[in-house]
Amino acid sequence: MNRLDGKVALITGAARGIGAATARLMAEAGAQVAVADVLDERGRETARAIEGAGGAAIYVHLDVTAEASWQAALAAVTGRFGKLDVLVNNAGLFLGKDIESVSLAEWERLSAVNLTGVFLGTKLALPALRAAAQHSAHGSVIVNLASTAGLVGSTQDPLYSMTKGGVTLFTKSAALEFARKGYRIRVNSMHPGTIDTDMGDQVLASRARNLGTNDIEAARRQVVERLPIGRMGTPDDIAKGIVFLASDDAAFMTGAGLVLDGGITAQ
Image 1 (spheres, rainbow, N blue to C red):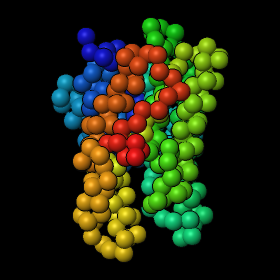
Image 2 (cartoon, helix red, strand yellow):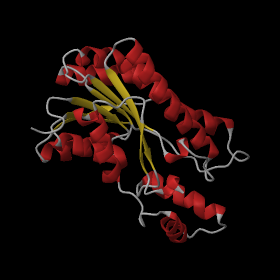
Image 3 (cartoon, rainbow, N blue to C red):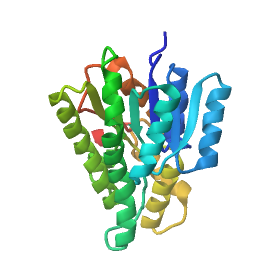
């Protein structure tokens, strides 16, 4: 028996990167997965690849900032699979701008995806998660993607850090609220360090600009030199942690944060 047999999971921002790796590993672990994103063709390719490998997957278009989009996506998932056990709020943006240079419109877009998206997903998926929890030994699960920037200050993007700090404390508060109400929904956060993804490349480009250069490889070397583990993370490194949090192996965890950062916040 696999760790997620019989579970249905919805992963936002799942067309690529950490989200795509999470969808693939969850399917390998036995879950039926919904790949949700605004990148339609890339998302469909991810879902097709999962199905081609023997997994069960669908693609749903989802703009996490829009309530109607959430409602349509959730209806599609429960209509296809009959329930929802796991929500992974993974979709996120990174600006790489300092306080003085960012515009109000850019901040509003960042907070809409990184904060409003997590709130809407949690609120609107709640009825389906609560219903599924009544038929599960250890209830349902929400995993929110935060960041090490949600634990310590960010030299590259203080506004990104502001949003991820919000996700960190929202996770704890939602976990406590759902426990108080007896909903049997565990809520935990994941805190990646610098990961080798498209967003990771944005972080490196931001670091390079702050160094006064366009040399992204020099910025990469600098990041790796600061990492005690000696390498950047991969999408699979983070996806494996998300699978753990989504599984019954994490049945006694709620309101917690799992840090997978190569040791950077230990310094």
